[in-house]
Figure 1 (cartoon, rainbow, N blue to C red):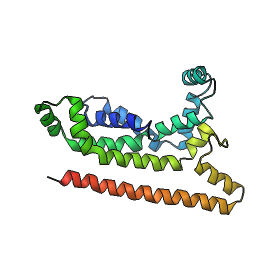
Figure 2: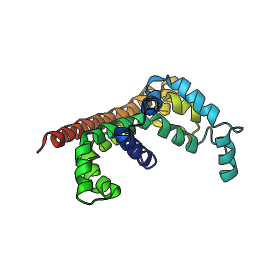
Figure 3: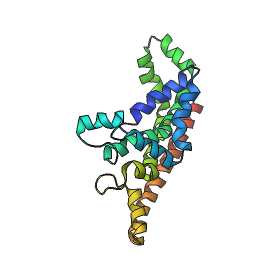
Figure 4: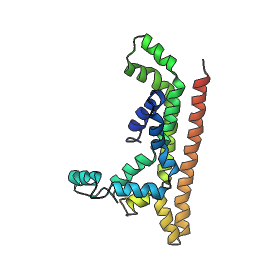
Length: 208
């Protein structure tokens, strides 16, 4: 979330307000992880993180390690894969603010930054929070991309979802059931928060 939100919020706000004619192309690129099979997305990310790529060489020069099959690799992959879950709710929230409020803030002498912080963010925060919650939940359950990019290295890239798969493969139903229960509980709480935040956003839009 610390890496995703600083990217998703400005991008969502820009998509909500820009009149650039190529905006649909950017929107399509953001949504692409939702429609691509995880294995395809994982393959391209893994190829982009290889030791001979620009990203792979830069990471090796900085850290001396490999970007692929590392925690940093799955962290970067998770940010990219979960971008649409955070950007789209933020974009819809900023679209709900409307140009009239931005113009009113400007007429009151606010700079664009002041209007963003004091007017737009307070109104858009339920949508931003909804996106954050959805991205968090999706990250916990992500399987295909994480497996492709990070493998299942104990103590490094093995996530809870991968551990459940390993327990099933080892015929450890009790261990798989316990871990699955944790994910089920977290997912239920997450979805409940999403609906609560969505209701809060509706109340803001309908208020005077």
